[in-house]
Amino acid sequence: MNRIELKANAKAQISGKIGILFVITLIIAAISGAAGGVLSFAGPVGSLAISIIITPAFALSIVRVYLNLFHGQKPEVKDAFSGFDDFWSAFKVQFLVGLFTFLWSLLFIIPGIVKAYSYSMSLYILAENKEKPALECINESKSMTNGHKMDLFVLDLSFLGWALLGIITFGIAYIYVIPYINATYTNAYQSLKPVIVEPAAAPEQDPFAY
Image 1 (cartoon, rainbow, N blue to C red):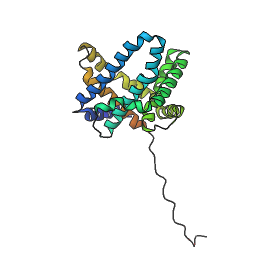
Image 2 (spheres, rainbow, N blue to C red):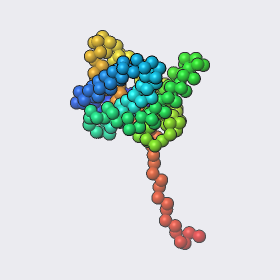
Image 3 (spheres, rainbow, N blue to C red):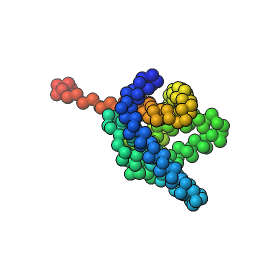
Image 4 (cartoon, one colour):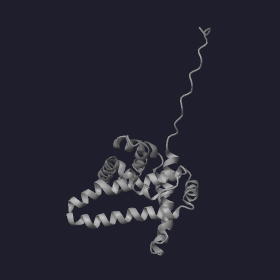
């Protein structure tokens, strides 16, 4: 996993599309914030509704937007809601990832962080395999990230300067930084995907071989 190459590809993919990507992000943030404010009056029930329906579905939407971008498809506003087609699957993946990470964190902080990286590709796998069970997505993520968790950690660290720039500019820089980070992680996922090799055709039998 070449970090410099991942970032270069991400920059090329988001070039000329920052505006629509910002609009998609803004829509998701606005709806999530508004829903959180309205449902907060319902107490724990409202929080549960957000956790089950809104947050996982929007997370899946974001993953799909950047997967489509990776494959050369132009983002559209409607893509912000694409995750709601599979909100239940998204919830199951997000719930199990959160649960497992929390349980590992009970041992100490470090195991929880390690496992968070181990499970980090689960939603990407679901986005490309909507019928795949949640546990299978998580197990495949564990397999994909095996030997690469430190690479992902270093990739995170490489964005610290960009995060600081966002703070210094009172969030304005995040218009570029958020798509840049999301596209880079999508490229990381693609680089970790196992290569599927088609089985070679069986050789023709020689009738005189025996």
